[in-house]
Length: 95
Image 1 (cartoon, rainbow, N blue to C red):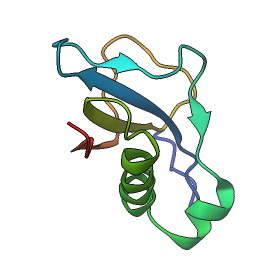
Image 2: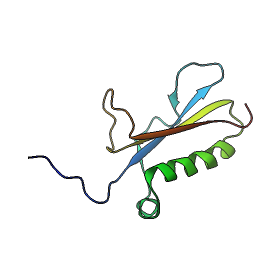
Image 3: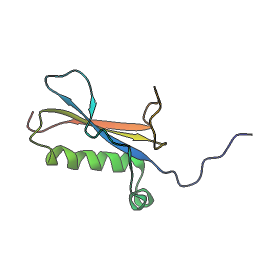
């Protein structure tokens, strides 16, 4: 029997960075994934939340040079090879 997904779906996120001098994406924080605010998910989609979060992060981290990416997951723990359900990326303005 297949389980139905709940109407409300929790998500977790992480911010990754790729500097201009390194080819690999690296997590900005080595800790566990961070839950997306329940309040945010009641007012917008995960895609809209991630896009808005990235836009703000790009300007808060303007001293870095490279690219930022927000990755969103349906599970709180990463498993090998599990792709994000949504990701978006942008170029830092100081780059």
